[in-house]
Amino acid sequence: MKSSKYLADAAMKALLYEVNVHPKPGLVDPVDNSTHLDMNVFTFINSAVALHPYLEEFAQAGIDFDGNDLRDLFKSIRPIGVRAEKEMFKATGNINTHKGAIFSLGIMLAACGYDYKNIQSTIKEMLRGLVENDFKALDSKKSLSNGERMFLKYGVTGIRGEAEKGYPTVFNNSLPYLESQADNDLNSMFLNTLMVIVSKSYDSNVVKRGDLDSLKEIQKYAQDILDAGGCGNLEGKKILDDMNKYCNKNNLSLGGSADLLIVTIFLFLI
Ligand SMILES: CC(C)(COP(=O)(O)OP(=O)(O)OC[C@H]1O[C@@H](n2cnc3c(N)ncnc32)[C@H](O[C@H]2O[C@H](COP(=O)(O)OP(=O)(O)OP(=O)(O)O)[C@@H](O)[C@H]2O)[C@@H]1O)[C@@H](O)C(=O)NCCC(=O)NCCS
Ligand SMILES: Nc1ncnc2[nH]cnc12
Image 1 (cartoon, rainbow, N blue to C red):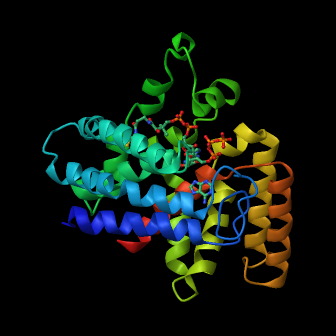
Image 2: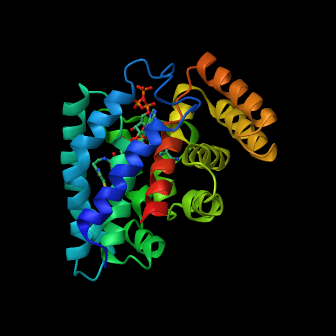
């Protein structure tokens, strides 16, 4: 059994490590915030620090859960997420830094607290029916979120689809890849892991700022970097630079992919 403090500290490190990885295309890092002019690395640090108490609450909810239906565990953490989102907006001057990360880390922390040895199967049980429940009766809603709009426009299920399937991009791809890179420097390991994520995931942020062709284009850039041996060699660096220019020119945000990197780093650390 891992304590809620141990799990929360790992989640906090993952939030801070991710924003410091550089040079990340379409994302904020200490050197470049071109596609997110409303925020910078300090906005993310303020956001992460504000979230720490909620990270412990998520984990403790999993540790304390003694019900029979794990969907009740997910129901019990959604109010914690709503409070965490409010705290994030207070800490960032109403900028959305970690809304998706709160959702994904909340689920991961609760699942780890509940059953550290069976995280993915616990998540699948917790989220059974999420996409159907969250996306039903959208036509009766007064205002729609980005994710809801992307679902109606393109059928992209975004974070909810990834989560309900048990984060396959993470458990099948990015986490095994990161664990295989353990003898490189952390920045290179995490940057190449981000490319694995981008090559596989359906990031609703990319589709919202661009369209489905933008998503296919950045997936191809990321795969080409990996095929060239990663961001560390000359050819990989050249493609990464082209990818960065493409994201800046089209004002693309890879926010969803950044969240999956946060989750991957968290699982790597615990
Ligand atoms: C289910 C919720 C996430 C709410 O969903 P909602 O429909 O409101 O939002 P979505 O657009 O569906 O997704 C929200 C964020 O999830 C991240 N994301 C998107 N696609 C994926 C994916 N395939 N895999 C993983 N994660 C994904 C992404 O979050 C990150 O990006 C945001 C920063 O980027 P940016 O482009 O700047 O975002 P904006 O400011 O919105 O856009 P601009 O105006 O700048 O163009 C940031 O959020 C990152 O985290 C999506 O944005 C969940 O919040 C929910 O249900 N909330 C209610 C309360 C609750 O239940 N909370 C906790 C539950 S444990
Ligand atoms: N580094 C980053 N830049 C933009 N959006 C993000 N969401 C999570 N991490 C992010």
